[in-house]
Amino acid sequence: MSNPLSHITVLDLSRVLAGPWASQILADLGANVIKVERPGAGDDTRAWGPPFLQDEQGNDTRESGYYLIANRGKKSISVDIKSAEGQEIIKMLARQADVVLENFKVGTLEKLGLGYDDLRKINPRLIYCSITGFGQSGPRKSQGAYDFMIQAMGGIMSVTGEADHKPGGGPQKIGIPLIDLITGVYASSAILSALVHRNETGEGEYIDMAMLDVQVSLLANQAMNYLLTDQIPVRRGNNHPNIQPQRVYTCKDGQIILAVGSDSQFAKLCQILGHPDMAESDKFRTNAARVVNLPELDLFLDQALAKQDKSVLLKALEAAGVPSGPINNIAEVFKDPQVEHRGLLKKFAHPLRAQIPQVVNPFRFRNTELKLDRAPPTLGQHNLEVLSALGYSDSDITRLKEQSVI
Image (cartoon, rainbow, N blue to C red; front, side, top):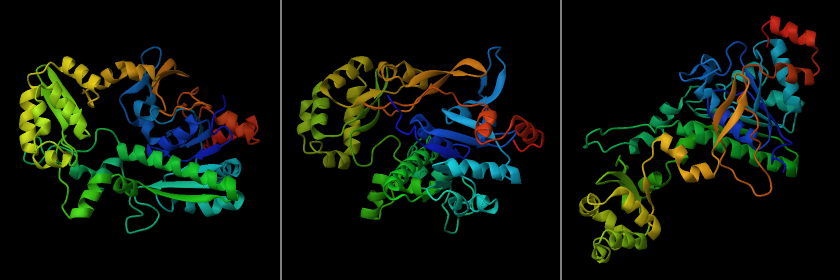
């Protein structure tokens, strides 16, 4: 089977996470992704450890775990884009590329002659995607940003964490850099849309992707709750603001979550707990009633679930179709039979070690397949291959390396 994007070449000038996550998605789909890194240093995330990948002798390499999560399937070349010869290399690559992806501060690449208006002169069909914290316009456009900062500014920390009046209450960031990751997903989606449009019209495109825009769009039901009522949403811990019962509950031998999403599911839960009458009560029969009477509902469920054996209860809930589950740690996630069956963990050959683990792309196609055959590259691993294809001789490449251009 072929790969969906095997005909597409991506010039990836991005680093850290949002941009590399987007280009990794494109690489998994089969695109030829050429990652450009700083000579001698590389992507910032290469230094974001420990942990670092260890070689066969147990010594730390310069490949951090952070770098390894977002750069699978790419070719790495090292180019000093501040040098005239480095800029010429980028222009030669852009002339042959379908997509350029970058996440420099606003105006940086324009000063180097590598902005969209510069590159589209040599490649009018180019899709050029810029990822920044705040976008290419507005009062904050020149301000740098990281995921944690955007989570704070964009409102998600105001609704994440335990309620202020409870122990441990206060704003919390999400346990993964979610805004970086979702920005990468949005960016890849926008790039694919622009490619489809280009196929119809022949026109290239410029994409202005901002992390804050992404964060605000992800406020979803919490945003609409506010916009409909003018009431500012607050932190509720694991309690859902609109659907009940949904939170963490404690059984005799551990904790589970319930994510009841309908009145019929609630009725089945009550039946399993031996209290079918609760589902007929006017206080709990509908979701709206359960939300209004949540303190009384919580009291009932806490008392009933405290008498239950966790594994027995989860089996009964699963059989009845009541959404529920254990709270797995990361090790338990990868031991889950469903995760194993779906093949989400894969080993890749690597230049510094026989194999390294990768959590792979969740896309599953019937008639095409993902391209999952290349580990994240070492810095400059593909200098010779890529530059030779551009017409550089061995002596040219040696000279560029001696002059620290590559």
